[in-house]
Amino acid sequence: MLREVQTARDRGAVKRRFLHELLLLGLLFVVYRVGRLLVAGHTREAFAHADQVWGLERRLRLPNELLLQDALLHNRGLVEAANSYYAAVHFPATVAFLAWLLLRRPQHYFWVRRTIVALTGAALAIHMLYPLAPPRLTPELGFIDTGAVFGPAVYGPPDGGSVANQFAAMPSLHIGWALLVAIGLIVATRTRWRWLWLAHPLVTSAVVVATANHYWLDGIVAVGLLGMALVAVGAPVMPGLRAWQAEPALPRQRRSTSRSGANASSRAPSTGPVGAVRVPTSTER
Image (cartoon, rainbow, N blue to C red):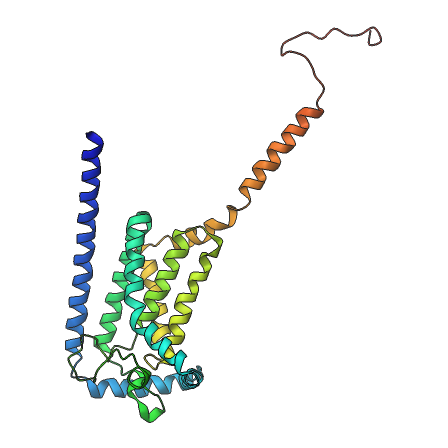
């Protein structure tokens, strides 16, 4: 009876925690919607900032985004796959990651949640202060809106009623969230293969640039903001990254120690019962 009551209490606590997290995500959604409305009329500034970013990238000698898009356009299947990845992976993967942490690694959940809130809040502030048109809206530079041309399309006209802020290219939350997901999974798990999670932000970076949804600088700024957010919330990232190094050697050390102990005991001469007095032999006398 007591066990059933405790189980019911645990289930109630989990439900309340999920409700709290859903309310938090809903609040972030409302803030994002308000931010979009605030910059909806800043079309001229957004395209002027696009010229600034494009010129700054050329002065910094960053790789030309057009080269990556041109490579993608050689294969229609890859273009559609990249568009689908951009549309369907970003938000669901982040939500699934947070849910998994909450249920399976709660000791890591809260620093990750605080980090994603800090990162998103900082990104929204920049979205409002520095509206930026993405490359796909600048065909005069040679870019193609792969979503609109090949599908699936995520956005409508820039002045439409979509909930997405199309002038929120700087910074890229796609890249920022993807990198946070990879870092969280690397820290929260112990398998040697967990470093492969870094493929998620790498693929995401290639996708958002090749589909002309972001500039390289959008991702660079997102990575910088994520680093500052991790420091600000005191995330235990470095201890988690170092912990894996000493683990694989422990079992072998234990086996070798026990084996050497057994060999030593087999080679040691028998001295009789503990506390017995040894009588010297005639030769020893």
